[in-house]
Amino acid sequence: MKAARKTPRRGRKSWREKLAVDNGLPKVMALTGPQAAKWGGASMVVPAPREVDALIRQVPAGRVATIAELRAALARRHGTEVACPITTGIFAWIAAHAAVEAAAAGEPAPTPWWRVLKTGGELNPKYPGGAPEQSRLLAAEGHRFKPSRGARPPRVADWEKVLHTEFL
Image 1 (cartoon, one colour):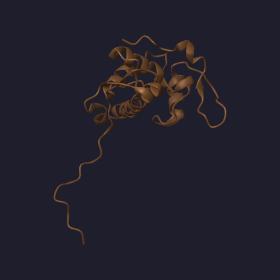
Image 2: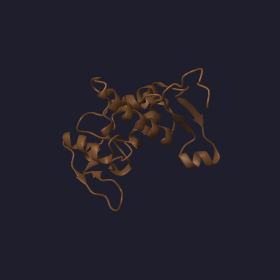
Image 3: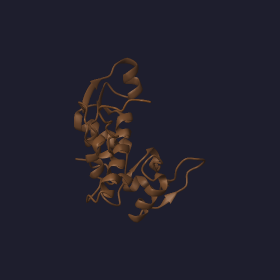
Image 4: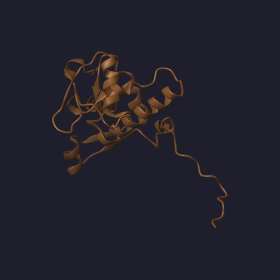
């Protein structure tokens, strides 16, 4: 028989806790050689989770943004040529889950994560509730959809016309 643990295991962090952990971010780094070629610039910012969340909060109802627009805004803010696509996407995903968690706890005005699309206006099946929930929330704001080919998620019809690019 195993002995009981002397210290209780701490439960997993909530999404809101994950959103609040900056771990020394944002961080600006120089890129050279293959890195610069791969990411498309000589300098890159790795954003903080709350920065990504704050940008998503700026997308007004009836408008949409893509991860590319969030990255461009982050790069401008930090004076770099590019923002890390991997962490920006992960932090948008965390912000989405944190917003759902906050709404379930009764907190007002959660982050409007459903307004952030993938490249080409596609819905993000990794967001809470998948593409069906994202399309439901976008449809409530007046957006229409067109199917994609194969197993790809649907797209917001005419997403380019409602693209939000005016980040502060």
